[in-house]
Amino acid sequence: MSQSGDHLDWELSVRLAGGSPELAREMLEMLADALPEQMRTLEAAAADQDLERARDAAHAIRGAAAYCGVPRLQLAARVVEEAVDTGEPTLVAAEMDLLRCDVEALLDACSGRLKRSPE
Image (cartoon, rainbow, N blue to C red; front, side, top):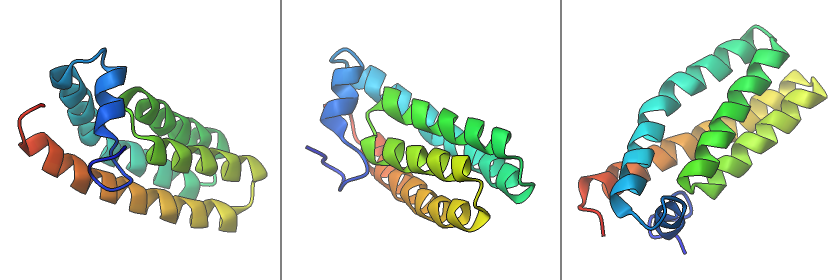
C-alpha cells in the first residue's frame, strides 16, 4: 500500500525496480524532474487544440508513471488521453485540472520520499 497518501506507492516502485530501493528512487527522481516539462507540453498542446500532440504528451506521462509505480498519476493521465480522444475541449480542460492536481501532489510526495534514505 502507499506510504505517501495515494500518490506514491513506494512498495510498487521498489518492486518495479527489481527490488532495488536505490533504482526506484532514481526513477522517481527522473519522473519528478520530467513532469513539469511534460505538463507544459500537454498544456500548450491543449491550448493550441493540437489533439495529437496533447494525446502524445498525456501518453508519455502515463507511461512514465507506469514504470515508476505511480498508479494514481497513471490513471489520471489515461483519463486525459481518453478526454482528448473525445475532442471536447471542456472535458479535456477538466481532466487536465485533475491531472495537474495529481502531479502537484505526487511531486510533494516524492519530495518527502526522496529526501529520506532508501529503505
